Image (cartoon, rainbow, N blue to C red; front, side):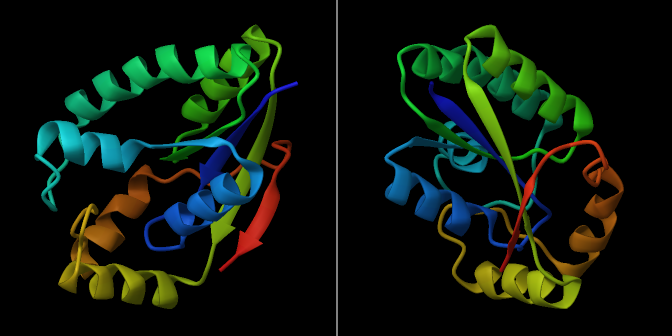
Length: 157
């Protein structure tokens, strides 16, 4: 049975690094929402701005794609952040709809370390969003912690 891995966590906690390592060691296909967004909408250039309408459209397209990989027996790692409970629920339901398994990985670290990583990444962003201290604090309002009945594996970075 194919498995979709949901990578959950806040900014700078190491989600993408963990997702890459998981993909490498398991042979799963890695799909990074941020990478696709930056390639499609900023020509790969780093940015501090994200248009939520574009992000939602892209997420919808990807939700039409990765379940097909699962149906074909290919494991998938989704580096989507999964900040909202509704996104996690939808992903689990899509996995069930193609008779696939799902695993939720909560990647986390303390805020001081995460913010420091974001600020350091700003100096050499590559394919990443530029996040300053104010954005780090402001975006927390959009982040929903995992529910007590959600089954997950904690990954401390």
